[in-house]
Length: 250
Image 1 (cartoon, rainbow, N blue to C red):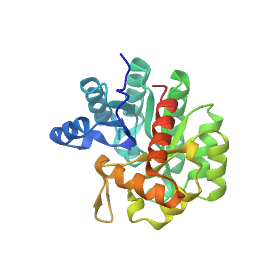
Image 2 (tube, rainbow, N blue to C red; image 1 turned 120 degrees about the horizontal axis):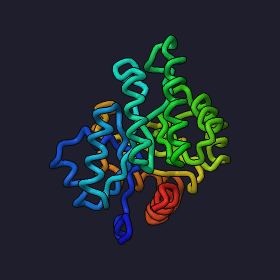
Image 3 (spheres, helix red, strand yellow; image 1 turned 120 degrees about the vertical axis):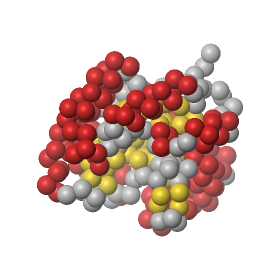
């Protein structure tokens, strides 16, 4: 049996599924979403893994510690997550990364240390990494490349054009967020990104400027991206499906 039913067409490359209620998750599954479910800390990594076992046709687990949880989790719990990664060998490690906007600069050295740990774990099992890199896009790209990680998704990319080009040249992916509905800067990224390096994401249930993000918003996001690029929606859907399945080796 194939991991994913070929009739499923909507692929969410970055969603905090563990934060949704069970009934909502059931709805996503029933509506045919395939979700790359990222984690924020040790507890959510465990829940994400449990959800992937329950909905193995629809949920692909990413295990990791979000940089915002650096102080709360600490290196001890980070090592517990890495032990879990080494044991279960998930297809994806994340959400991991760097943040120069919402975290103090004084924490950056510790952020780098934690990211290095997770990149090494991902490289050792040949996993995809799901990267958060707000205002640290080049830093994160350099670390991913130096770690020898072959597959990386830079989620909700809003960085410089030259870094975007370098991400594409290295065969990495960027995911376009459903917030493209209201975020003009992200529309410009969607216009510029090569369709072969593009995925879509919800980052649900994050609340962005009053917009509660959800996998249910992906259809509208595809429509917006298609309009920006001047192609049919079907072309975007096919590209996203092709990129997702190829990148996750499904």
